[in-house]
Length: 115
Image (cartoon, rainbow, N blue to C red; front, side):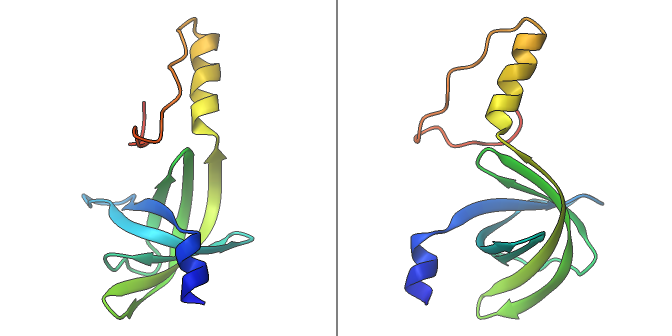
């Protein structure tokens, strides 16, 4: 089973929305309906509102639970909002406001958040 998980891992940054907190790195294990299972590098408290950034996606949700598993933390989020295709949305916005669209990012240029 672990080899199946290793083949398909999406890296994310999870940032608490309240207070002054740094983003927590992690990997998505599964997405079923509105629930996302992840493993995170640090613990987050149940009930914490979070922003989840993955390449070309932005999601908002709440931590349902976070338990220590070996050296990381198994976490389940309940997603409330998701914005897929951020690059396309940004380009449409730029066209609307008369700005030139940016060239697509290459594999070497990782998505680092807002543009």
